Image 1 (spheres, rainbow, N blue to C red):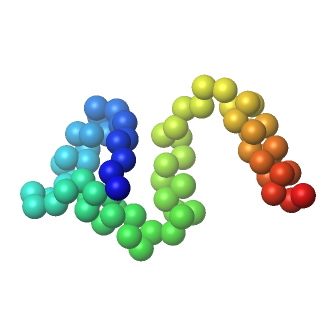
Image 2 (cartoon, rainbow, N blue to C red; image 1 turned 60 degrees about the vertical axis):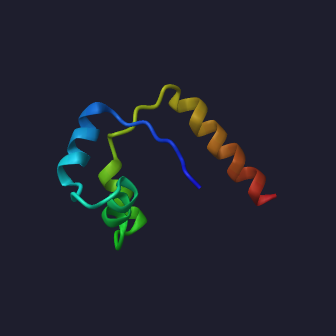
Length: 70
């Protein structure tokens, strides 16, 4: 299965610099996240995401959590 992702140009340029010549982007991503805990990955990503409507997103998260607990 293939997925399409969107990244900023500056991030793309950084990835190209660290990508090995014989490596696909999928292999690069796998190499970057291999052996890294989810918590560490989230800490590195902190501040990279902008939320359009943070309050709406949080209310949806809380609503879904409540549904699971029923």
